[in-house]
Amino acid sequence: MSDIITRETEGVSSITGSLLFVENSHNVAFGEMVEVILPDGDKRKGQVIQLSDRFSVIQVLGGTVGIDTGLTRIRFLDQAARLGVSLEMLGRVFNGVGEPVDGLPPFMPEGYRDIAGLPINPVARDKPSHFIQTGISTIDVMNTLVRGQKLPIFTGAGLPANEVAFQIVRQAEVKGGEPFAVVFGAIGITRREAFFFMKGFEEAGSMDRTVIFLNLADDPTLERLFTPRFALAAAEFLAFEKGMQVLVVLSDMTGYCDALREVSTSREEIPGRRGYPGYMYTDLSSIYERAGRITGRKGSITQIPVVTMPDDDITHPVPDLTGYITEGQIILVRDLHGRGIYPPIDVLPSLSRLMNLGIGEGNTREDHREVADQLYAFYARGKEARRLKSIVGEDGLGESERMFLKFADSFEERFVNQGEEGRDLAGSLALAWELLSLIPRKELTRIKEADIDKYYVKKEKTKKQRDKE
Image (cartoon, rainbow, N blue to C red; front, side):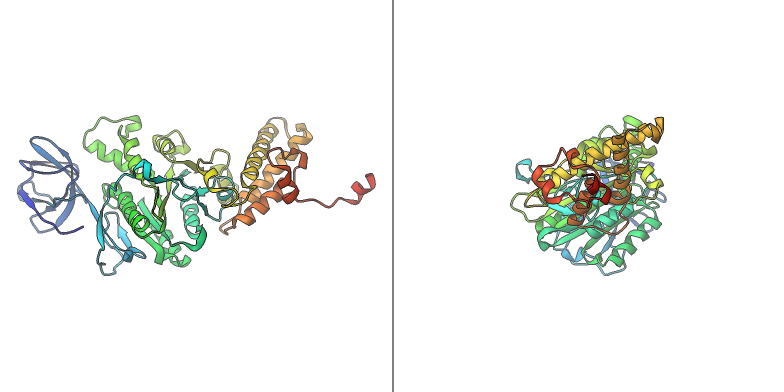
């Protein structure tokens, strides 16, 4: 933030939680940043969050412990929260409010960006249409990520969502060798999780193209509301001013929403569903809708938010509202994880609504959509056979049910379960055809005959079959 200083007032009328009520402050703007100056000279940041004829309500970053109502001074900075931006941000680590915490000297900003961002005019939005290879077969083949998309990972407590998100970051590739950057916003994560990401970026050799905003679990709650906005301000600079393809990972948006609920409670607002504020949908939209592409600009912002579902409940307000705003979801499930399958992605409820815009001839391969559809159909029939088996036993299954049951098992063990090693799209599609070839050709009703002729893996007939013919 710049050091513009304008007005000061002395004394605070009252303190409630992390809120200061300041009386007789004039010409104050909603969202304006302030400095709270304690008697000992210590300074804390704050933001004006509410105005009335009599009071200005200030939310203090870092809490209100030690603030003296009579001797504390409030300095109004006549500006909204802003982030100093430069290409020198790449390779740096900041805290949740954009201050460097990596021990390196500060950089000289090229300019400043309002962390609230500017809404993209719908007319100026460019249609997402470029495939991003993540190296994860269940995403690349069946839930394709497209440049400019917002595709969240829905997970449960204890599932490896951060590992999957980091694997995508490590393996992600864009066509044409265009400049690529990663912005990682950590929202209320533990120190162990922070160490995992920091070590991972360093070992992968990708730190020089990464910007990290780190809000830890023991940092002030209010900082969590700023962290994703600082991260997206950095992403917008890199994408729309420097022409880079930017991948933004936000982990964990449930932590963000819990902080929003806590702040709403301290402001004594009327709660909505499960205590979350009624405006949470609008608030989440102000974050998620900052992904996209702009006509005439080379860069793009692609978002992968991690959303933890409390009690694995997809109808919980946070994943529920996220699903309305974003363009699909990748769902991790406990059943696959318990059987040692990684990444434990359940492809049936997972979805990428923009998949068709980024696949097919010219982007991926002409058979991509057909292969995905056929895999879905066969796997669904296999899971249905598995449910039937749990009722009547395997001996009660017909020949067709046994065949699709075997397909479902092979699909999970070979296609879904790929470990931490990445697969390129060609390798993923080749494996998909191998699995499809476990099923007689006549069952492949969702694929064109020409593509079956080209890719179906023909098996050598046994001596017994040749003698029979």
